[in-house]
Image 1 (cartoon, one colour):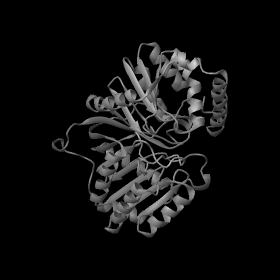
Image 2: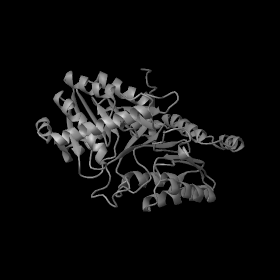
Image 3: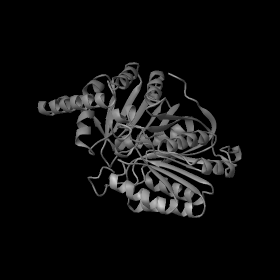
Amino acid sequence: MKKLHYIDGNDVRLLHSGGEYFSVLLAAIAQAQHEICLETYIFASDVTATQVRDALIAAAQRGVVVRVVIDWLGSGRDQALQLTALLVAAGVECRCFNPWFRRGWARTHRKICVIDRQRAFLGGFNIISDDISDDGWADALPFPRWDFAVAISGPLVTHIHLEADAQWRRTGRLDLLSRIGLMRDLRTDAKVSRSQLRHLSRAALVVRDNLRNRATIQKAYLHALGNARQSAVLVTPYFAPGRKFRSALISAASRGVNVTLLIGVNQFVLQDAVAHSYYPKLLSKGVRIVEYRKTQLHAKVAVIDNDWATVGSSNFDGLSLFVNHEANIVIRDKYFNQRLTTELQQGIDDGVEVLLEDYVSRAWYRRAWYGSVYLLYRGLMRIVTLGGYG
């Protein structure tokens, strides 16, 4: 695969749970002086989302250029249109991504915020309270949603901003005069002096779209798994990857790598059934599977050999790997990776390990159910991805 473009000199801070993430995000929005670019799949109407909405409006009213992209389907069609009208009336530039599926099936599933081209936030958090289920079925969660993001300062922010700006332009025509004026006003750059940073990391931005980056995120995972030598911990709420991804997991385990999958369950019945259809072969090949049942797992993260880590929006399913627009950060830094590893170990300890003997002893009709749902899922994904899902 094409080598990732790693950039040195970044301060990458791990943010765990919505309480930590939104407090930092709201403070950064309040401090913005020139420009805010925000992109999200879900922009809800709960208490947390209202705080973010009001902070964006306040920034626009004090002269900050605020541009928001929300997914038309993810935010709910009526809610998305109402929020867009409200924000625009208050001075915020806001657009819906792919309304009425005019550009095919793709959704923007990315969670990005760039402030003054100096700070960026990227990860798995939608704009929604982390004690409310984001599937629309449950009113409250037993514990806050388990998720991660990163706050970034340094030269990588420039690349994240370019990607956010490109998405804004893809969702509609950017007014050229206002953009020229903004470029004139923004004399800042994303350089950060070493004295300001606790630790500098090497990191890369990895995006997936349906143009030049159709398989970029999957290839990054495949390359990292192919080079794994000791351990690989991969976390996702939705596990339904294609054949290449599954083969990479099995190949790593066969080389003696300790491969652990931490998978979220109990959100969507059909999704669980598809994931379960993969369990027998993976378990028989030495892949360890742990189900996280404490609360809703929403994290999309991984650590491989304490040398390679990723945090972002991409799940391990057909939609994320072959259809939706996604964004991940890859970090090559042992200190960051140690911190993330500690968090993931806690998630594994809170989970329930799946054993092969327990799985194969289940009733035949349950195993038949898993297989039937998998065949249905595979057929749908091959249609949606024009045969790209295998």
